[in-house]
Amino acid sequence: MVQISGPNGSGKTSLLRLLAGLMQPTAGQVLLNGQPLHSQRSELARNLLWIGHAAGIKDLLTPEENLSWLCALHTPAGREAIWQALAAVGLRGFEDVPSHTLSAGQQRRVALARLYLDSPPLWILDEPFTALDKQGVAQLEEHLAQHCENGGMVLLTTHHTLARMPAGYRNIDLGNWAV
Image 1: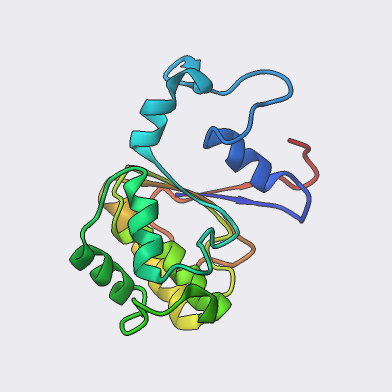
Image 2: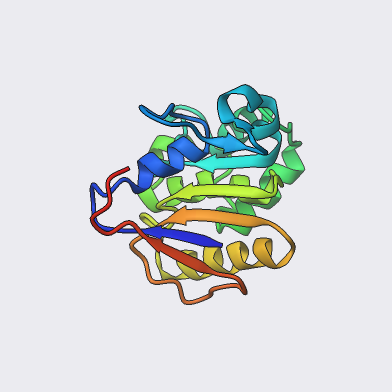
């Protein structure tokens, strides 16, 4: 697990977006296995799960429909798996309600339920603890640590102090750097 920290505007999100292949650098290049990242989109898609700082869900869709749609882009998931993922993030009973009726924390949990469905080795998460209550934070910390302990990797930004850090945890503080 690598945590990118730094003050607002220090480039944390930009760095994650560059590493996830969502942005092109204005100078230089990002390499994956010695090759330019932009030339390896399929490799990147197979090995990476991106969840940005916004929930990224459609307000008019239900949590189940949102996850079904998001998973269809990579690894389709059945209804039972989606319901289990929603239960894992504390949303049992909210599977079929319009997402716009959910609180910000519940909408964030819908987005984070993807972590229970997709299993690429690298998770890149921008401010994943945003809008979560204490229970949600503790549960997410545990899930991230388990992913790392099972051989996965997590690259995240957060202003939250992590209580559960897996072996090999590193923090990169951008401080006054510019990305």
